[in-house]
Image (cartoon, rainbow, N blue to C red; front, side, top):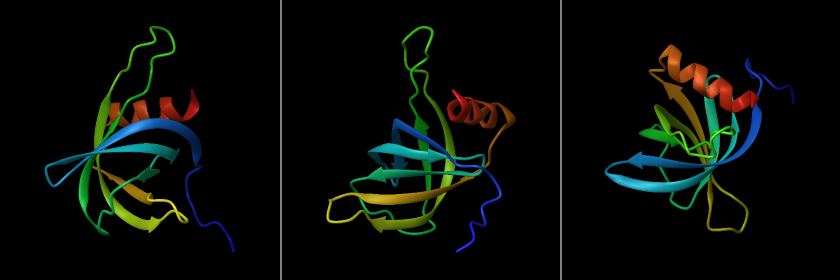
Length: 109
């Protein structure tokens, strides 16, 4: 099957927090591109749900976390094997140039 993605996917292992319907859900980032992200969570989130994703990268120079956030729509949610985890596909919405720049910094560094 041909890969139809327009943007390269970068593989990152990074903690994230999702805000959805008043809940805070811990997750683990799998991959990242200019238009979306893949992550693992322990709660099923319905397709097309709107949520906020908080990235918590560690600054390589200071060792401190520098959190930033953006909005996303769930475009995939499927169980991950026999584990009690779900694999989410997120499509970013309402990205500012600053947030897009920070996402690309995460991807490259």
